[in-house]
Image (cartoon, rainbow, N blue to C red; front, side, top):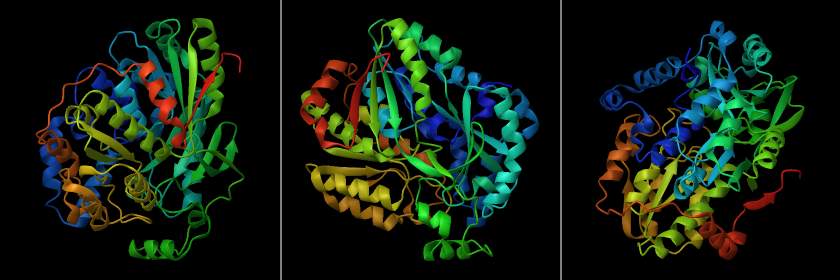
Amino acid sequence: MPASAFLASFDSTAAMVRATARYLSGRDFPALGLNRLLQPPAVLVNALPRRARELVYIMSGWAETVPPRRLGRFDAGELSAWAAAQYPARRFPAVAIGSSNGAAVHLYTALGIPWLPQTFLVPVRRRVDPDDPAEALRAGLGPARTVLDRNPDIQLHHMHDAVQDRLMIRTMTYFRVKRLRLGAAYERFLRERLPPGGTVFVIDCQQTWPTRKIADRHLFQHGAVGGATEEEYRHGGPRVADYLRRYGSPRERWEAPEPDGRSPEAEWGFEPALLDDIRRVARECGHRIVRISFPEPQALSPLVADLYRWWYEHRGIAANRLLVESFIVMEPWWALRTGSVPFWMEFNTESAFEAVSAYLDRADPFDDIRLTLFNHGVESVGLVPAEQWETLFARTRTGGGWLGARPDRFPLDFAHYARYQRALRSIPTRCPLPAPLTLSRLDSFLADHGDRYRVRWEHLSGTD
């Protein structure tokens, strides 16, 4: 099986690798980077009744699952090789390794550098009750052992989230695998694509989550970043009870295996064990290491937005349009072509709305705001309704608008994935694509502005 057969195209890792690689190859990122032939069917899905749209969404995810019998052929090194192979065959001044992050994608494209992810999602075909995490854990034990026995260089996070992923986990088990060592493909990439003296950026999202240790290198995570709080996942509450009632569950709360520690969050967190190998290769090749640490995924977004605004102003471009993106509904190529300042949100939750609002509170006013939404098909705990997102448009000088979204269909507006990029392309502003922002210019920005953010830039030696 090709490595891509073990990947979920709807996941943050696969989409963000493709978005970065396409930009570095001079291409845009339409329809989440998927086949353009899928766009007309996506539009037709919106005409279906709600239940039918949910079923289409569930089945589209099921089509990407891996049957358990095939896990005996799973090789995590081939996923790394897949990621490395997406990038143009040339040398780069820097390479990023580590956590998935949408704001970081815009940092990579500004700098003209590739990103090698630590974490991959392997969707294993398995039917379980989304509201029974204990059953989900039991069902995943055998497949997890198969994966771990064959792949000694990874840590497996079995993530079960009945809030953000409610529809998907009806037919699949989320195995997120994190590299503990670089492996052959990544090590070769650092040696061949990065010249001596080049920079390795370690993307260190320090988001953690309560976990249960099942075995060596095997963790179970109930819940995830994306609406409900840790307390609500563990003990329930009025919002959880109402949510379960609306989706016809007989339960009022979830009963999950009790956590016995905290670990890097399955999707977003960085596992620091990988640093040892990065230091080794950096020492042998004469590379420098810069660790970019931030407490949670959206903490990087204000810095990247301000970096773009600063960069545009130095290029003589009016930095007056804010592009608010959600999860993998992003477009780095057209952000630069339309002179848009990107602000990335992990999802469309209360914390995301608060992050955008806080940024607008302190930023100089924008002329307009363009907004995407991530439609995950669930009216989940902590989801901010479209009419509340629409209030952001009033915080501009001249207005704003949705990028191809049908707010009355949110969060089941699956045609949005086919329309958002076309709407962005229709913006009449056209800016020349710039030469990459040099690392020295980035250092200048950080020297003047870096202390404003919840982001730490740390220069490491190969022996620290």
